[in-house]
Length: 116
Image (cartoon, rainbow, N blue to C red; front, side):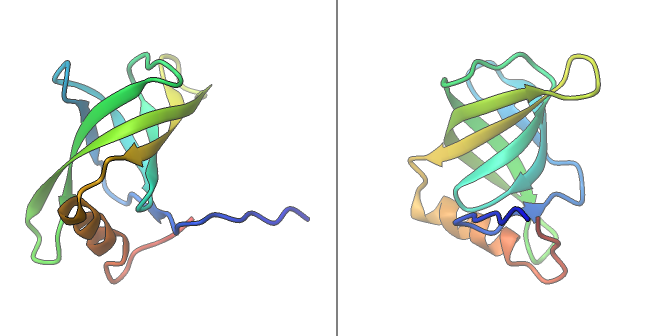
């Protein structure tokens, strides 16, 4: 039996959350799941392992409003997905401000969330 130990709980993205690279202004993929420390991205663009990125995405808050989040992220790993031209990628957030952290925590802990 394999026991998995993660430091942060990961919320599944029930809806499509598109993620853009701030530097290129291109959508690079969509969120698979997210924690306070990072995200699993289904990438639709070629991304470089061990590179740093500035990412932007919208999260829906408790009132139903879109809340923009911009984060620095380190691409830790990538693995081809079954669909051509896509890859699963794992990012660790870096340089998160307190307000960004609060937005992420509120989204992750929202009632009705499902976790991996």
